[in-house]
Image (tube, rainbow over all chains, first blue to last red; front, side, top):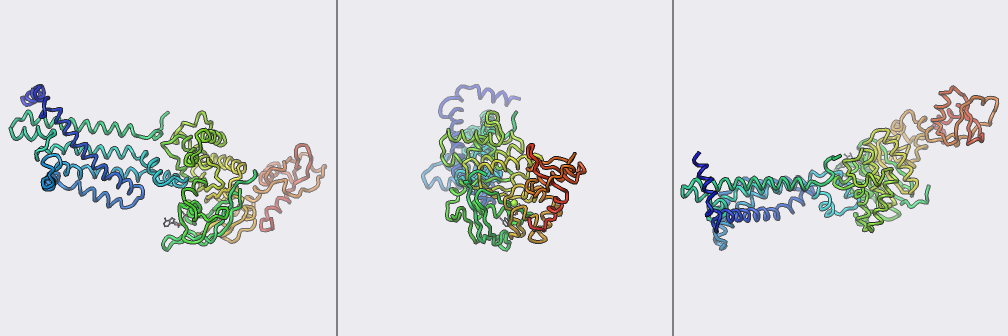
Length: 227
Length: 324
Ligand SMILES: Nc1ncnc2c1ncn2[C@@H]1O[C@H](COP(=O)(O)OP(=O)(O)OP(=O)(O)O)[C@@H](O)[C@H]1O
Ligand SMILES: [Mg+2]
């Protein structure tokens, strides 16, 4: 029982909401780290998946390659990231963590985008091609709009995974919400540890909810029968 | 028929191979401008493959296809396709676009001005019997199967193509709707003088719609003839079987009472005889005469007597192996 009281008191302490170690700054750091990781993954995965989905080529290879990213342990990647980042002068924390997060974000984006494009009714694509739409027009005006909800679903999954895993950055002296957990553990300040865990969980849930709403809002008109 | 703006299409020894499979084998025939050519034959005989080589959705292995004397392989495929209407069984309507946007697809690609596109969309919707005011903003999911097919046809006609390719466009709707769509389509095609290549596996549809019918089997063209001739003189046993043992009756539905050399009137016999109009099909005439148990019928145009039609005369028409 007492731990909840301690955590509530920890949140109530105005000192924890201020300065470079305060909750708002840590949340922003967390969002920055996660957002950039997802953005980099999008830039890498989406064009490849769109191309493979549109042409119907090499889909299995793409998905299997991407899944290797999922199989690599994040902690090991952070270690590898350190080994690469330090000689490059990129320092501790941010970039080594990025090195672990991007491979984590790629598989769901890659898989969902590929499937989203592939699943567009082939007859619709055939009719579009038969009427003289160029391949780029088929992709841009038919396949992407129709596949967008599924694509956003994959990006949402990637974002939630990244938000949860970005916590690990604190192990290699990164900022973000993982700081509260790692410091809480080191200092045996369990109120801080639990508060950090709650914040990460909350942020992950909000991410999930936001992307679910986005996916719903992106559903093309006319796809559900309405009176 | 209106002055034809249709294109002439010529297949010259067109072959398509997939590995060891020969989907289409040295296909040669010419579709005259403004006419409907129906490709018919059992499943897998190469109808769809032949059709899709015209707009280069499939490239032939050898041979050439000419539209108004121009080899299709010499033209950019997307440019080519924008001047050829294309309708498929599943309609392929864009589910995220309204009826109006679907119909406007090719005019938009061709860069028509907005006002012209809107006029054309409204005109087409009226032509296919959909009220523009009520239906323009609907999505395909909000239409019946028959309405969807109509929109598919309108979309293919939107940019006034000289040629339309249609792959079993009416196969997915029930027989009553199909018959109505066929009639509407015939009317539209006659009015606009478009050349049409139409694929079906339904011989009755082929006979009803085709000016020419191309019967295919295993990638080969077995017979290419007007429907009357196909019924009267099938090229071989395969065609005879395919058109059906009732081909004599089917042929009657292609012939009209007015086309028969009528017997002179014997007014004494004609009291109480059924009255036929010259535009009636012989098949319908036969039904009328059988059901009223008459040997003869009077043929009248308005209030003018043209002559008499006898059962013997119809019987002669039934013996289909005689010259038509
Ligand atoms: N991409 C392909 N690869 C290999 N074989 C093919 C391919 N497309 C078609 N075929 C073969 O070519 C032949 C002709 O096919 P096509 O689709 O033209 O037939 P169809 O007459 O339209 O039949 P249906 O009435 O069933 O639609 C078939 O034997 C088919 O299996
Ligand atoms: Mg077919």
